[in-house]
Every structure is written in C-alpha cells, then in structure tokens.
Image 1 (spheres, rainbow, N blue to C red):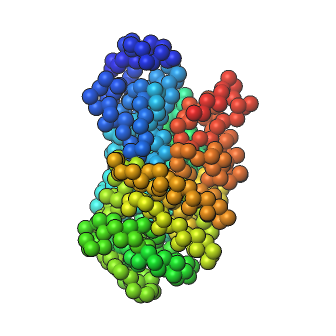
Image 2 (cartoon, one colour):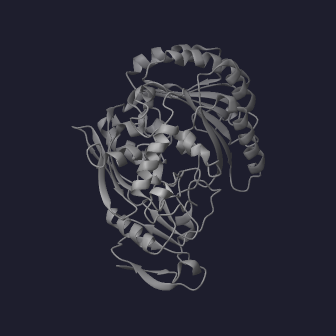
Image 3 (spheres, rainbow, N blue to C red):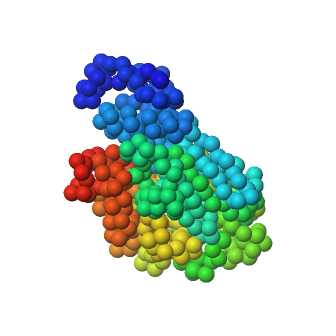
Length: 484
C-alpha cells in the first residue's frame, strides 16, 4: 500500500491536499510536489502543457486495475499513457490522474510459433530489438520511439502494412482493464465484440496492458532507404510515382515526404535543409527482388541523392527518430486520399513547400495491398480502400517563432484537399478537430458498431481523453456523457 497526497474533495483540488491511499498499488505515484513531476507529465508533443493531479506509474496490470478503480471511486478524469507519442496529447490531462504504463516495456518472443507478447508501455524500438534477433517483425510504424499501444489501438500503419497488413491485422489478443476495473483477456474467442473494437477504435474501451502479435519473417537485412529529388520536381515525381506504385508488389512499402532535407548523418551536409521531395522505401522480401522493383523509381530523372541499399530493418525503423524529437511543438492535419489524379497532385505540389519552419513537412503513406484486401468490417479500422494517408505536420522547436505561420499553412493545405478527402487515420487526428472527424475516421457503419461496444463497456465515458466515441446516453443505465 502506497501513500499519496490527494485532494479531500474532487472539486477542491487547488486547496491543501489531504492524505489518502491507492490500495493495491505498487508502482510510483507522482504529484505536483514531486521533483520529477514536470518530467513525468511531459509528452512527445511539446505544445501540450497539462498538469495532472496525480501520475500513477504502473509496474504491472494489477497497478492499472488499482489506478482505474481509484480514479472511478474519486471521480477523477483519466488519461492513459503508453508511449505518450500522440500528437493530440491525450496521454495527459489537467487535474485528473494519468495512468502511466511507460515502465511496462517487456517484450517476449516465441520464434517457433511466431508470436510476440508486448507490455502496454513498450515502444516499437523495444519490439524490433527483440523480434529481429529471430529475423521476425510485425507492422510497427516508421519511428522507433512511437508507443506500441497507441499505434496498435488506432490501426497501425507502417512500412510492412502492404505485405503483412496493419498492426491490428496481426493482433491476436489483448489484456485490457475495463472502466469497471476488470482485467480481461480479449481475443476472437473471448469478448469478441471488444476485441473487434480494440483493433482500430483507439483508447475508448479500456487500458491495454499487454498485446499478443503475429510475427513474420522480415530481415534482419532489408533493401530500404530514401530517394531525393529537388522540390521543384515535386509534380513530375508524383506523376511518375502514381504510375510506379500502381503495379508495385505488396512487399514494397513507400512514404513520400515533402520538406527540407533533415540533417541526418547519411545526407551530405551541403544538402541539409534543402527543400526536397523524398520517397522512402522498404522492401519486405529478397533484396535482389527489391532492387528490381525499385529500379524504375531510382532511374527517374536525376535524383539529387539515392540512399537505397541493404540495411538492418531495425536501423531503418529508427532512421527518422531524430527528425521528430520529443519536446518539439507539433500541429497536424490529415486525410486519406484517393489515387493521385493530376488535380490532386497540383494541390499537393502547390502547398507542400509553403511552410516557414525547416522542420515542418508533409508525409504521404501508400496504403492498398494487404490493407485494402481485408474486409471493411473485419476490424474497426475504417476507410481501407483509400490509396494514401497524408499528414501535414507543422513542427517548430521551443523558442522558434514558426508556430502561427505553420499552423496556418497546415490549415490552408488541409482546406485545399477538401475535394479529395476520403476519411482519415484516427491516429493522425490532432487535438482541435471537429468532433465529426472521429466518425469520418471510421465511416458510419463501423462508427455505429463502435458506439454499441462503447455503450456496453464504458457507459459513463470514463475513458474520454482520446478521439472520443461518446456512448449512447439513452442506453446507459445511470450513465452520463462526460466527454471533455
């Protein structure tokens, strides 16, 4: 039993706290008087500055159960922190309790059955480190310090998705603590309605304390890397890219990045901060097949730099980590897009390089392949037939004055995409979105089904610090719509 100062009355938290306790909690409890409070409340997006009343750093599922029950008993707001990487900053709240899983980063691999068991606070770098020791991997984003829980619960796009599906397509089971403080094992055979919802519905349904993933043979060496062209060639590059990916094999994952060339060690110093269009690629198959598949793209016009080559998969997964640093300020807008028609290309090329900050960029993920072959309602991930997911990211370091200008750039770029929008990836939604965009992320049929699951498992909307799906009030016995 751990002692912690809490408010005597929920509505009087600014006054002198009384002393109470969280029964059954063995982790670390941090309040505003703690020396590590500011470190513990900080998340990836430095633009988020929230002050929770209490941070409960859990060391196991039992701690999560205790923290959820404590929060419900005391009427506290609840935020859930896995990796803390979400741009909207939903991992931290004002005044309430942060249930922090960041100390729960264990990964266990069963190479014979190609399975991995991963705790809810793990980062994708933790997973890749363990699975690649066996030449195995599952779809896990494009940045290694992204949290496993947030990326998975929202769907999970990444380099391997066209060959091996989204992260949720490889999810076998989840351990989750519900709003009632129950720890459930959830799978196709156990609580299948909740399992369906957790595969894309975000943090709306509980606290995921562990995941079981299906693994695939990947690497440890893959053909990967970016090809760079000058920004003035963006329109022509995109037109060629459109035709190139139309028949691209599923093994080839690509992401197009529009912005200044980052100061990475592999990029010559005289190219740092030069505006470029960069096509990153990762081939999830034999290197010789990848070389053949990428040959036309590498030969188009004259790239200013070609860094494609054999490299460790885990190293490639972390290659962009230094371009999206913890503590920088981020503001995003995003949309799914159809195939790249000429008029859409003109909009992208016309807006992508109008930002002010050299750190700002836009990134476009090629979907299709295994993503679109799964049935639309197989999981809660919506809009599977879209061709691309585009995210427009204003980025500025602390002390830089690009925030207002690049936030305006992001909004203007997004507005120009209005005629082409085909939904949105829920993990790319920011913190100031129109509430209707959550429905847009799923489409009506999936959203309504998620609504049923939400109403069943969280009728009081205890878990609403997320891209929220509000329960049906009329179906909630004694419940209320308390979304913040």
